Image (cartoon, rainbow, N blue to C red):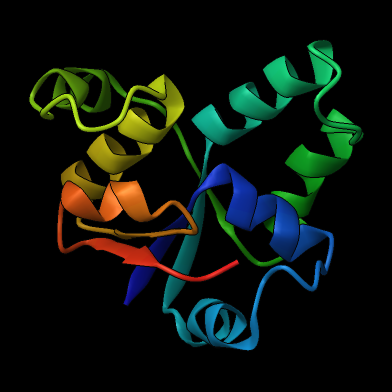
Length: 127
C-alpha cells in the first residue's frame, strides 16, 4: 500500500510524537511508499507565519527524504480534482490532499475523521 501523510501525521512522524499511535506507525512502516505533499509544507509555512507552529521549515523539507518518504508535488490535475470534491470539508489543504490521493491512487493517512467521508482511500487513525 502507498500512503500520503496529511500534514499533522507527517509532523507527528518526524517529531516522534506520542500522538502518532502505534497502529499509525505500523501503517507507515509497512507501506511500500510514503509520500508527503508539497501542500503540507506550504500549510506548515502558513501556520508558522501565524504563530501556530514552531518548527524549522528547512528541517521539515529535509526530513521528507531523511525519513525515507518521497515528496509529492502539487500538479494541475490535483488542483482540478479539488473542484470535483463535494463541500464536506472547508480546509483547502485537506481537500487538496484528498484530491492528490485520489489522482495518484494513494491512501491518505489522517487523524481528521471528516475526511473519511470523501473516499475509502482515506484512512483515519486516532490521535
